Length: 94
Image (cartoon, rainbow, N blue to C red; front, side, top):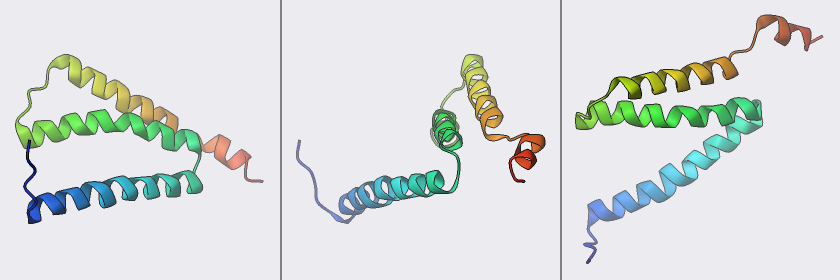
């Protein structure tokens, strides 16, 4: 396999290495610094449903009923973890 080094391949490598890898780690560290680690860790469960939706939109991927159900369960689970009841947040402030 021979790699053609042209503008597109160099730009793709630059984008993957710097923007996606380093940028995502910096965003992750900022989220951990500003919020609870459990909330940030729960956001990782959103990645597979987001990838499925992206594949459906961009590549005309077919979605079965089981895929949709599992995506809804993942999103609902993250919503439960991230959502804070008002009574607990006000009780801890004072």
